[in-house]
Image (cartoon, rainbow, N blue to C red):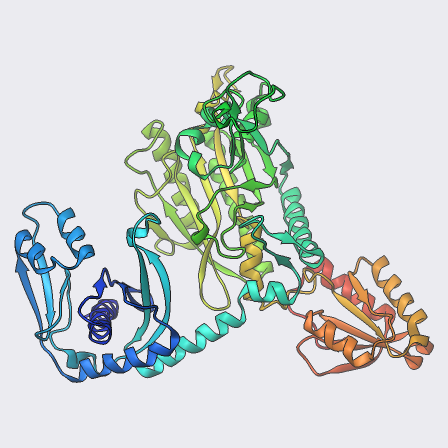
Length: 607
């Protein structure tokens, strides 16, 4: 048996043991819903007579051990739909699942011993003794809605970690502890980078230090794009629904858009409307507006403003405008899933012959950017789905070009092919980056689009004088800046590379009489383009150093009589107890300029 099959088998079986334990503890009236295996274990959903708390976890775990030690036989049975409904007549969730099954469907149950039976496709272990060597631990309990529908029953979901051995469970718990220490929401608060408030759910407040980091990231993105001949545009954040009707977003994405309903009683927004007359507003009105969830339609309009020749192509329009996408409250997660964000968006207009070279250049940009952050990545290629738009010859040609690029870059077989998983408007390449904890994140994407140019009736004059339709390449490398910042905050554990850190140097005078020299050091660094902060108050020097260390400033300079007399600085290096004495100020400034210019990943420990 393959390891993955084994993991699924025993994790799924442990979910049944969990359910049996809960029923034995809380009584036969417990309603139990579903209990699938997941990546690090399993869970089971219940309706219970009282709320489960952490104090209950050891009791449930001990009951599970007791059940496993009984060495009970697991029996698979096939029964009719009528018999299944009778068997589970007192279990409302099981009944609903059975009722949803088509007539004639094979229904299977699994008995664990003589006193527990569950509706399940399986497979499962043959006897509980097969689970005796496994290691498990209750992770948490949370609320869940039946079938994910917030209008349905609310359940208690008990999560269980489950691994083949105690060592693997121990390693996983250690990994989780490290992940918690790297949690960007925790670090973001500690470093005063950003905050969230209920008055703007899923929309970050960028605080001074965080906004510096954000701006540096955008500055880097702009510099890279300028080197590759991109041009930048900006467009309205709120657009009339006419635009979204043309693009197709109104039909397919309306539920994820923030909409300002139009006024039905009059065509002007200034028309007087009674404040309590809700019927005066409707999304069907002509002046309905919506905040843009993506930049694509505005880029199409920018291209369409004038006639283009094939000689102008490729035309690259990058945008960093603010986007808004409505999310369910339960889906939002710090910076990883927000309702307001920017991304390094680009829409490039090309001829079919230019696709290959353009995408090779995009991959080169991705290489450069991800290397700067010390991040590795892998590529996924998604091909034509069944509901594709456009002519099949264009698809075949485009897919062949993309495959040729990927084969040249990564080698045949060294990237994943997701057959039929492309967007309906064109094939795509997704770039999955890997962080310090080995987690993968989809950030970069390159998508060909045959549909939007058609919807907006875009054309260019080809060399033969005929008007032809360009192909659009949607491209992002960082993806959402918010999400990327969340990822690198956890990747670097808040200790960002020198060039990206909000403040790169902190200056601490030993006593107030050294403030004048400290200010001179600050001015010299600022004039050299170094971001510097200082504390010239009469607070104890050690307290100042401690505070700057907590903010993870890469270098903390301490200055006193000796430094002022010799025009030097004493340097405390981040994540080190080392203090470098008597470093000439001009030499330190040159180092900082070099680190910024080269966007160096590592922080030098010696100067």
